[in-house]
Length: 325
Image (tube, rainbow, N blue to C red; front, side, top):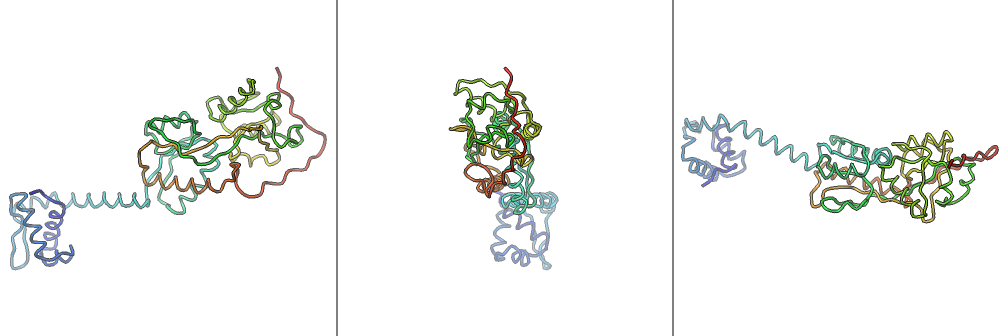
């Protein structure tokens, strides 16, 4: 016969209240059933733990020895169970998330606001990184979840589609190319281009697209963050290539944003996780908030709703100087 948690709780309740009758009522069982649980516990230990008295029940020497360590153990167990139930109900916890900078500034804040409204005690610990780094962080279990471009990692990682967007050219509205519905890569290759650094997934997509046209582009300037490229484009330093979901596009409403192509440059951004592993409840709650926020994006990958009115053209055309060399 083995010692059971039910038997230990029965003994602790009788000992605390000094009465089989009261303990049975608190445990919602009959008194005979309670007596059986105590006897089974005593049989498993090979010791008598309680003596019945006219006043109720008193512990034996062995019972007092057990009671000294049992009470704090049961309290700790109850606390642990309660904490796990809170986690399961998503009432508290922390999510370790690695995300692309463009997603961290664009889609993520809205998702975090959703999460806070429904689960105010959940916290997000954010790490901004490029796609390759995000894959490694998820693989090494440094984070619970990643948001990155799908580069078909395979193996122990999987990518669940979250949204698709496209690469836009950001340029002055009076630039000659701004009058086109979509800018061909062959014409764009002759301009001064402002691109993200080579380690970024967006830069990889851009380089591959130009390579398919037989061109190798040397950027006029590179940067780590999309906001830096937008600022440079506002200053007239060149044409910035940025994702359509980047929040930084709102920094420059006076600039024109045009798709590339045809066929254009598109990417799929997804949730990166370890294959065959369940997400922690807090991470699953964040994933649900991200999916809900992504559902508000239009098919182009931009926020739904009417686009801002195009600024009126004034003055003489101000083309961006062509790229040297």
